[in-house]
Length: 288
Image 1 (spheres, rainbow, N blue to C red):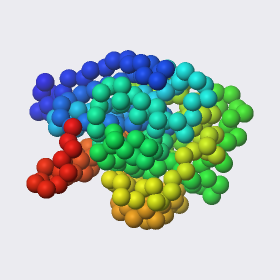
Image 2: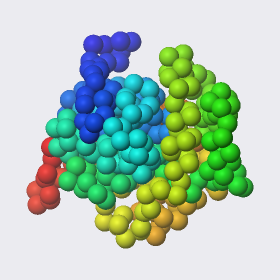
Image 3: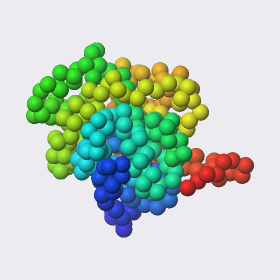
């Protein structure tokens, strides 16, 4: 289908059960697999522009996260934690017969794809991460400290706080955020309390990454050029210790929202470059 000169690949949306979870999934395109993992808001609709851009060259899979929007809670309530999302995504991808993929994630989605690269390497061609959510410091106290008191507040108060946090502190383009639509923002109102209570407050249980575990993995890492330096400086320190180059995207925390075309081009450039290298004679060619 061609709309205003842009080729739009047919979207297949479906619910798929894996690991005791009913996952809402979206898939587009054809070619090597790319998996887009949502961040703390848990809803894949923010990836629509990126997924459409990539679908002319790749098979693009995305989904709502367990316990968020249109995906059910984990079968075991103890598994509703940021520490488990990497394993949960791996279970989903395996069950969909995706043999080998590029994984993108920012924030807690970045936590998931780094864990995939370490623990489920057979699924991973490469990972692309942006502002991974460990030791986040948007202010002098840190984001976890500033939100921890919300756990004892009612859902309406959490929603009011998170609306401002997500739309302005984490994002530089409020118009782009609002253009995601009323249905998206209605779903997020049901997600914010889950994000605070099950992701933010699971800080002590977050997966700890050791530089040695990340060395020699195919990782492309960025932080936002418009984000305060202190917020994700821990990303810079860990990437440097693991000998991973780290770059900048001209955005804050959600490039899929504010600069979707630039993000899709970034993912395309990195992944296509790896695929071209793997096709050269004498190089590893495990392309699936």
